[in-house]
Amino acid sequence: MKEIKRDVYLNKLISRKENGLIKIITGIRRCGKSYLLDPLFKNHLLESGVKEDHIIKLELDKEENKKYRDSHELNEYIKSQIKDKEIYYILLDEIQLVEGFESVLNGFLYERNLDVYVTGSNSKFLSSDIITEFRGRGDEIKVFPLSFSEYVEVFKGDNQSAWNEYVLYGGLPLILSKKSDEEKSKYLKDLFDQTYIKDIIERNNIQRVDILDSIINMLASSVGSLTNPKKIYDTFVSNGEKEISSNTVNSYIKYIEDAFIVNKSDRYDVKGKKYIQTPQKYYFSDIGLRNARLNFRQQEENHIMENIIYNELIVRGYNVDVGVVEVRDENKNRKQLEIDFVCNLGNKRYYVQSALNLDTREKTIQEERPLMNINDNFKKIIVVKDNMKHWITEEGILVVGIQEFLLDKNSLDL
Image 1 (cartoon, one colour):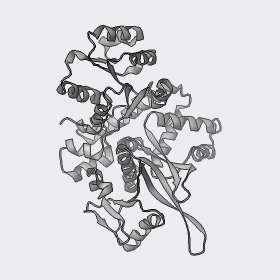
Image 2 (tube, rainbow, N blue to C red; image 1 turned 180 degrees about the horizontal axis):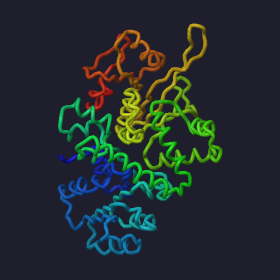
Image 3 (spheres, one colour; image 1 turned 90 degrees about the vertical axis):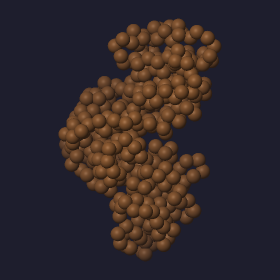
Image 4 (cartoon, one colour; image 1 turned 60 degrees about the horizontal axis):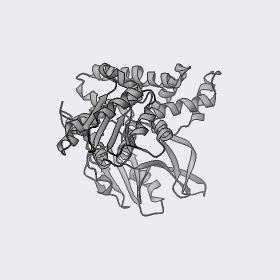
């Protein structure tokens, strides 16, 4: 298999070199965090002139490095490798295996010639922990499964074949090494059951594994639809489940989020310029995992495409909300229209709709309507499934095919 470059994340690491903070690489397990650290970042250091003995790397999950899971041993080992006042790059993979790793890393911050990079698996090392433990001294780089453009670079076949595979099996890097549909399905299902679920259960001392399983299934089924913890709780109650509280449902959803399996997108009232507390939407960080969770049964193209667009916008660095715009119908009754995504980055904003097609004038008007009721001049875009060249509607809205949208990094500004 060809080398997967992951330049988006490599460049983030490079731009943070020697910034005085601990670089903490997070993301769903098996998305490529370790690979980013070594070989990609390590090779960059060597190619930029760093001497090999000034790169101190430990893979803490290896049996031969087991003794360094003791924080004192780790600290002593690192210190013993420092021979001069030049910069040393510390690369620690699976740091969560070290008991008391927080104090060791904080100690490294006092050494001016140490530049520290760590990865941690989600079972013990989550972004919420990072915020608590490092309080501004950590710099988080969140890694995602392969975007479609990364996937295409290494896929053996044309773009349409790549798309057909991607919407079914997603972008976890190892999926590309699996040959048959059976292998791919088994890999994703086993990963969910034996890694992700197991991690959440062990970390959070989950008592009701059946409830956790059901919640994950509900979130997988509701991709692209509005939901909230109360709605999920009410479903359990209506099905006769009495030994569960709304707090339990809330907590379990948070655990699933903390493990980077799903991301929550809040609703934003575009005209009122305020957030609406509930309901929200939840999107899976990898569409293949979502499909595997449902045994590849629910293959609604519109929801899958919406999930993939959401992930692409997040990878590009945007803060992404679900938009709502209020209008009045012909009887002056208030009605809320949904805008799939309101994307913000600095002073930039884009409104993005996902639609399978605009094959009739009526369908075009329907998809344009929420966008036309926004009273600002930020760019408005409709992404469609058709593999076609982008065009502009009569109302001045950009229409772009999903593959062009995903493969052109400047597609929001076409």
